Length: 237
Image (cartoon, rainbow, N blue to C red; front, top):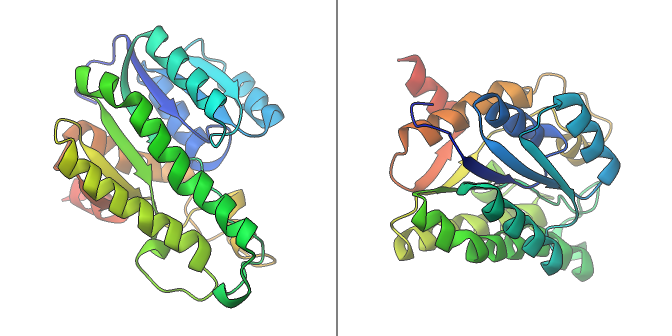
């Protein structure tokens, strides 16, 4: 990244596994302080031990919990200049995923709480600092937000709503770039849960997708929806 990361702080939700872990590792390597969380305390502890970086502040908890969100934001703003929010934590829903006609209401509410309402709450809490520090917001989305895949109605519709939220926020708060970032299919625990019993070894490793996000953060194009594959194709030209 061309911009200085001195005293720069990022919040990365869902930092213990998959893409969140890969992003956290990359930011730490670039000199960021990362405040990362995860629902599973043991997974987050393992990640912190393996990354072995003084720049990682690991805070176990659930993003749907208001007190936990307050701790995340308070810790981040107290650690330096909060310049990045990565809303990565996501909830798939039941596995295998049910069709909408059979989708349990309580499960759908839980998906939306994690995938839509918690990201918005974190945005609301961090926006003043991000405006002051010329920061950036990244909301992790999915191709299921734009394609009507059978069985993906719960997760996909929550990500579609997050896409629209990102677009409206960009119009309302033009001082802060807001990116809906679609990493594509990856070899993660969540993706395996979406395809129980199937071989997903042909999917990309999360670490191979991170350069696309770093390119987005480095070039800071206009707010919008960006696919990792397109960003990497542009970098290769």
